[in-house]
Amino acid sequence: MQFFGGSEISPSLPASTAAGNNAHMIYVFNRNGVCLLYREWNRPVRTLNAQQDHKLMFGLLFSLKSLTTKMDPTSLEKRNLGVPQLPGQGCSFHSFHTNTYKLSFMETPSGIKIILVTHPRTGDLRDPLKYIYNLYVEYVVKNPLYTPGTPIRFELFNTALDQYVRSLS
Amino acid sequence: MGPERNPKTTRLLGLFWITRNPRLLRAGLGHNYAIQSIEQRGSSQIFNFTVLSSRKQIKGSMPPVAPRSGDAIFANVERVNAELFTLTYGAIVRQLLTDLEEVEEVNKQLDQMGYNIGIRLVDEFLAKSNVSRCVDFKETADVIAKVGFKMFLGVTASVTNWDADGTSCSFVLEDNPLVDFVELPDTCQGLYYCNILSGVIRGALEMVSMKTEVTWVRDMLRGDDAFELQVKLLKQVPEEYPYKDDE
Amino acid sequence: MGREVSESCVESLLTEMVSSYCNQFYANKPELAARRIEAIGYDVGHRLSERYTMERPRFSDHLEAIKFICKDFWSELFKKQIDNLKTNHRGTFVLQDNRFRWLSRMSIDPSPENTGLSQDSSVALAENKATQATNMYLYFPCGIIRGALSNLGIPCAVSADISNLPACSFVVRIKA
Image (cartoon, rainbow over all chains, first blue to last red):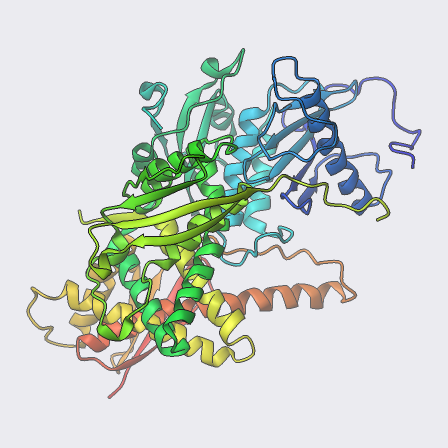
């Protein structure tokens, strides 16, 4: 399988976009790996179909968490790679960046994973991710029409999320 | 869990127009906060939120932010008249007794409804309390008793009767808004009137990977001096990779 | 100020009650589910109005009683009054709450799902489903109003109109 197989990706760093247009896309997964939300604002290159894309993202996070815990020099608790963990167990990574993008990640003890992909020069997004979790609680979890574990299709939530993400710098 | 890290940094910022003033929103990003409520006014959304801590405090080594106190959260969430809650719950129990006939079926149904509520409420609890990990059963039980009960019901539970290996404990409630003005008639022998609570706890704990068994030990409606729920940890369920390789 | 609980307690209880009756007990008989939900609301309204009118003189006429529902009663429940009251003076009253709390979080995305349906019918289907679900919730406050008025000696029928969300109008028809 070719991961980011498309050769059109520009090797040079894209010019820093104007404030308010930093975010590429967001994913929200639940503890069972169901992609509750995928939303994109600026994604010029798409190489996989949606389902493969979501699965790859979830797999990346799953493996990365396992790796970062395995490499933790401060923890006595040593686990074998790939052994399932409890959400919040071990250490947790919150972002990585490449020359072309930055991925910020948050996981709640209930296993909700929020992933925001932005311009590589974006600052620390840990607080904004918490804020997005709060939006999820107010507009999705508390919406009586929402069935837990199903994809999110709510206008109020999407509007609030779009507005908020646009304000990030 | 203890007092706030620094109570001075916790304050209600009040009304906040997100659509009309995005700059204000960015200014707000210097803080770590929880949304307490959202109102819609015309095309604008007004966010009421509380600052949990300023970013300066948590930058650098980023020590885990201490959970907020239940009192502080309860003071800031939207609250309603408890009579409405108590009477609505009572009316539901009465209707279930009529429709399901068997008391045992009603107990089961209340527990199931509680479970469904618990799996939703857990995220509100986590988002507003700032609890970032629930790996240790003892810590988790403590935070549920002191923060969870307080932020939703406005009362505090105590945690007692730990067994030797730390996998079983009791939540004790001396004050319980569910039973204000309730007296059980003789025809309801065997009814666990508050069974919804055991379901909520079971559901919420399951979402943080803890499979539990929750049973009533004491019940004031049956003449005991308090409500006591025993919570027994059966196992902690780690997160499995959810996809098969050949999918 | 009396005792309070978090709004989430009441809202999640309502969500679960409606879902139990609509999806579990009477999945294929929406009219029976509606009747049960209304009955639960009636019970609550009846008891609440009993409590709130204990130390009050009797209402002299229907309008006085309706005004009590719009002001004191609504304030106890929602911390605000009914925004607009209309009547045809022949026993029909329309009580409008411009932003009814129990509907404030209900929303759906009109974007179509990936179904074989054409975009228009899929949107219509999603909206229709959401409207149906929303109507089920409204049987509860309708029941509350009917219960409260019936406790004040006024038999009536109550329905809700949400053609103008997030506003909600409750139509009270007093039985002669």
